[in-house]
Image (cartoon, rainbow, N blue to C red; front, side, top):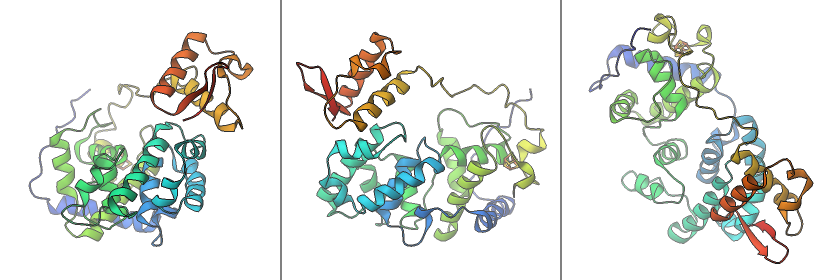
Length: 312
Ligand code: SF4
């Protein structure tokens, strides 16, 4: 297999690159899905909640849960007044329930430090204020700055990285870790005008989610098809790419989810080790998963004598 070209740092965006960026923006204007967190009346809190939910969970599963959350907890203050167990229960089956816990902690800190308003609007301090919140990393901070406040930010999720990697550098899939070189290149592509920068971020993300997906590239529908380096090279390397998806069935993650589902539905504390619905799980694995859920403070042993747990 020919070695894909390395991403060279871009110090200045060439007209050719600008045209590619504009093509993605035009495509996005025509093809963007109408999602509630993209509407003009969505609050910064709504955007923040959507960004946390969308990490590792597809839009179709997120949307109904997001709507329920926004009805129940339309502001950080509303969520902060509920319990962490309420947040984990309402997380439903979105997966990775520590996100519910972090979101709840985040709401409390927003109330304590920022009077209940999501920070991020300040051009100088916004990024640092967001990064100081629990559970907010580089990606989420940039996404909130761009999509909630309309600021120019370098938003880099796996979809955007894949589109840039394929179209500009001929790489089937991005590397496991973002390098400074890759980030610098992506940053140079972001238009100077904030509204265009936001549209490029949202558009390249949407392109990666709908057209240039990890498994299938529908190049015939892509606005970058005439310029795409990977397509011109015959789309090499996808078969050899390491599979990053872990087997789900029987994994600790699945068992943790099943334990949480039992406790979410229960009206009283439950001794999960004796339950028929979990009898196919090896006792050692069940103990390990219960222990890790306790360590993560997602559940708690509330009746030691009965060995009964409840959401934390
Ligand atoms: S032309 Fe194909 S491979 Fe290239 S960016 Fe578009 S969908 Fe992806």
